[in-house]
Image (cartoon, rainbow, N blue to C red; front, side):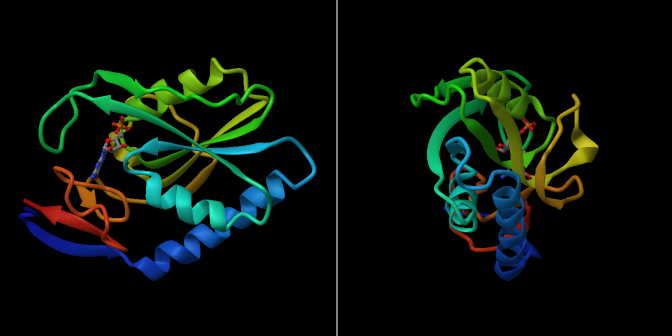
Length: 176
Ligand code: 5GP
């Protein structure tokens, strides 16, 4: 069962307004009539963001899924990232956007971007709802970024703590 105190940070309305802007920007960068556009979500955290972002893009968009886990307990990851669900779609020569919930140290995004790059997409970009730049351990270019946040542990809108809180419509800081 969930425990800890929630302190609201980003409201559901703010999230949806920002996603509408991100969807418009992606639609302008990849207009209909070009190649197939794939949104590949990093499970589990990015599933809600992917669903809303896809509906904010005014063109045909394909959906894919990958999952990486990083080993470590609690709110700190240990640093070793392993892909547990590989991509099973053919994205060769397509335009591909990796959809992340949050880029923290950048290790997960690095591993997943390398995994997708090995499938031979024509273009590969990164969309992340949240960015914690103060924690970065390696340079990661975020092409479509929702919000920059401080070094705080957040939950909601797909982000969990021990599998709780993912279905909250907004994002809150969790004080344990
Ligand atoms: P990175 O590999 O960039 O350090 O971490 C990325 C992953 O760590 C995210 O996909 C997410 O699962 C987890 N993570 C990092 N910061 C937070 C946070 O503030 N809240 C939650 N719930 N997960 C986080």
